[in-house]
Amino acid sequence: MTIDPFLTGKAFDQRAIREMSLAFESVCNGLGMRDDDEANRRLVAEKIIESAGHGMRGATLCAATIKEVNAMSDNVQEPAQSLSCLNCGHAVPLPAASTSVDTLVICPACGADLGRWGDVKES
Image (cartoon, rainbow, N blue to C red):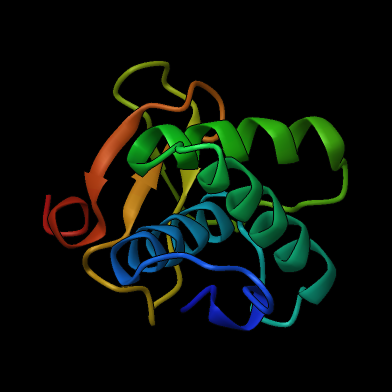
């Protein structure tokens, strides 16, 4: 899942675009967004692009975006299957089957980085 369609008119280097795409996938999965949830996906992309433009990267970018979107949106639904956050015990939605193994799994409650999906799903 890439953030490229939302970058029209924005200038970022390839590394930043890759990090934003991984954050985009992590946040959308962490919030349990469906692939066809265009409005919420656009909101997530805009928040990621805005924060990345201010220099935010990695797990901090994911956690900040999740917290901001959660504060703004009451209609994001979590999927039935989840993991438990080792930090706070919150239920963390499982990413979609098509999720990249490099996607970070972030707790939507406390923002803890639970690791790469490839590592998390093996444990």
